[in-house]
Image 1: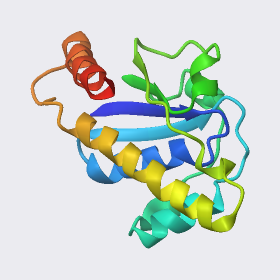
Image 2: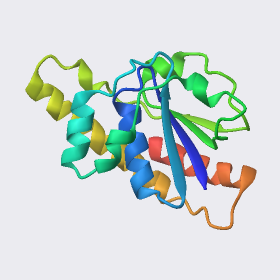
Image 3: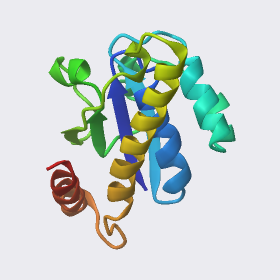
Length: 163
């Protein structure tokens, strides 16, 4: 099982969407988590509503939380840490247990739009972008590969997807 930690500053929208998508698509192969450097404490209601409309009933179990939860000895060891917003990518991250590879997938903040209609369109656009990157991650052959070789395989795939 590959553990992936998605990070955004507020952990209220993009990282929640990525966690939810990967946990569904990667069931049995990947375990996704999300956190924020400065969590809002609330999952964005537009993210929840959109994910529910798309059939992600398990979104009710997500919560906005601090990345500090993943630095403790009892935290799951993560293999990949992926920042989803430019602000979080520019921050100094904590020291993660293990030796996770770190990547940046920059997506615009869908909640930054001014009106209800634009926000809904922005959330769907960002969802589709995240889905494309998660699909690329799912295409990485991980069976029979572990440790540093696995991280290199995933890293090569993700780097080629970003460019």
